Amino acid sequence: MKPSNFAAIGFLGLAAAQANFPVVLNSTFSTVGPRNVRVDTGTYGPPVEEYHYFYDQWPIGLAVSKTGRIFTCYTRGTYQYTLGEVVNETAEVAYPSLEWNTPPQGLYNVSNGITFGSNDAEHFISVQAVYVTPDDTLWVLDTGRPTIEQSERISMPYAAPGGPKLVAIDLTTNNISRTYTLPPTVHYPDSYMNDLRFDLRSNATESGGGIAYIVDSSNEGRTGFIMVDLATGESWRQLTQHPSTQTAPEDVPSYHGLPFYVREKGQPLGFQEAGLDGAELDQYGEVMYYSPLTTDYLYSIETRYLRANPNKSPMAKKDAFDNVRNLGQRGGNANGFAGDSLGNVYMLMPEHNAIFIYNYSTRLTTPYIRDPRMVWPDSANVGWDGYLYMTINQLPYQPNWNDGVDGRVYPGLILRSKLPDGAAKNTLLM
Image 1 (cartoon, rainbow, N blue to C red):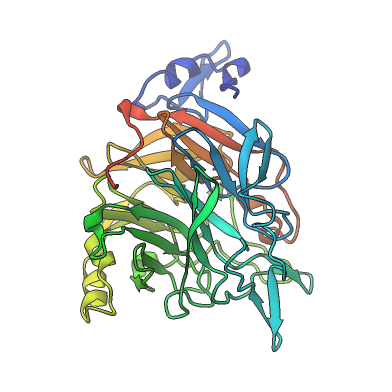
Image 2 (spheres, helix red, strand yellow; image 1 turned 90 degrees about the vertical axis):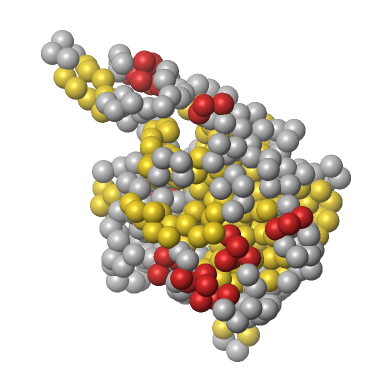
């Protein structure tokens, strides 16, 4: 671990700015030179520590266990493995084994000229997200849709039933304990499962086994939530193509002072168009906060409407559509979310190299941390040690958004920062 070293560049007021929380107005500023010229330090909030460095692959999701084990995932094209465990400051290994990360028949198949991801339910294809529940189970979300290169273009095959799956791993034994696959009426061929949250309370479902909430960020537009009853394995959808889950058209975000357009090789100039992305439960499991990536708005819905299975209640879909709340703008586009024991929703803000907080008690967005090293904070997880951990992967500079040119520079990072106000891991949803 390495603490921030920005004091070395002469921003005299930086230590004072970082020493206090909550962040106060103007705490991002300092002065330099004999004339005391005001400058934006690019930094505020509690100190940000460098915890881990990635030199072989770019990270997406991460999860921290009770004992401090850290698991990371990497959406796969050519990577040898898609799920890993951090073993030291600069290295990871395939988890739970390289075998589980190696589908014998490959990552994809071609049928009648159409490319599909592997339908292998017993091996990982391309893991997008990981999550550790308070019972110390590692949950692995496999999209079943690897990134491949065809005809000099980077593309993503359609999903085949069996490939997209939710896998539970017992961290005591490192063995697979459960696997849930999804029918094509719930997970469409163009679905893309992006993130997940859990409520393991016995009263969350009629079966008493808990529920998983999965974000479907389908680039093709059929965005929404997928729910899985963890006792029965039954799954269903809600808010499919609801406006609150859809991308904002022709969005032009600004990353590091540069207006950003998508430049796919061989394609006309495009826009950053990404639908439902960040999602987080309140600490009681009664409200889901969420938003598309390319919008400045935050939304919420009471989870009872998501838990209602349309196969059992003819009004369930309409009830969900009618009960979405627009909570207003929050200061920019947001990527992944995380939550804590105080009900804070941490929103990763790639346009600002920052993380903002929304709290239902104030109904306002407030600053938490900002740091120039946060070059696309992708996902975050609250650890059991009172820190918020986050992956940094320089995503806007990946080759498939930049005419095939990879503008990223290793290493990728795991950063961490102390939680505010004595916040901790939320353990109420057991």
